[in-house]
Length: 442
Image (cartoon, rainbow, N blue to C red; front, side, top):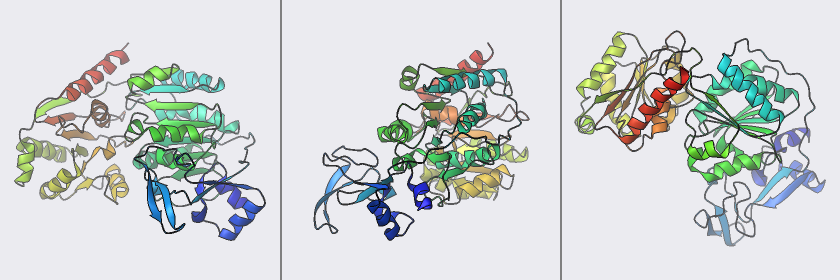
């Protein structure tokens, strides 16, 4: 019963798909420990993700109840929620008592990081939400460490949520090293079940559909990133996962105007932790590059840039606008060097490939926007093929450029926007980076 309580506390879960025997579930329901609710409410709202649009809550002929039923298309990848399915949660969530937590980070914050960390701590003391607006490489994660340690020691349950699995996987080992005695769970699509009751949860924002009134604090990392910034249901999931009147910390290098306006308590850092300026992208024309790839040729300028990186033994990321183009280009680049790999959202081995790039086992990667955030590789050089394509917003271009120059040992990485005509988003990204550098010098 204790293991069941720890699993369900703060969670909302499909009754028929828990990792526990159904007999144990039934006994807990009969004893009054577990609350049961229908997956689709009478007013046709999904009780898990709170979606209620007629496009997402649709009817079908259900074999289980042998009648017309409704189900939620929006969160179906996490298991079908329908009118005749039950969702369960533990009635009285576990409460944590304040106790000390090991804190093993020995780094030092810069003056700007320390100021932001102190401002954040003050907001949490007053139980108010806060925005950390800081450029790529400013050390946003590190400045969170002291406020998080204080919150954990006060017995608060915390979730750090990020829109993408790759960001969660990058954060997980760092947080586990800083808080070695804290029970930490890492949740994403396909993640293994972890035992115990986690006081600190790292999760993709989609995983928050499965939580309700669970956390005293939620940190939304990369708050501007797709899909969080485009899907209102994910913002609702964050709020649903919080206990009443609990604060949210938003962390972003490129926050939207809406977020800047909505959160009055803000900390701004426009200088990287090592004090060097952000690399300013260089424009380099690559006329008719699609035609070249269709003819099984790498454009000459692009091939020259990659060969120079290889000669200098510099790892590189080369971003492409589509997975189709990555697949088209991969065999061509392997003719240059077999140590070049492709990494994208449909690549099951992307985690291992990124680790190999970090360890110097591969020379460079052809990638999609999947690696625009949360990945730090020392001395990485960055190229964007088709930077003028619509898929590349200014914020995405800033994030991709932000992969370069992050290390204090190699603070001046190169960023090239290869284009078939300069777009407004390219100019916006470049102008913003220049403005950040100007603000950072003040």
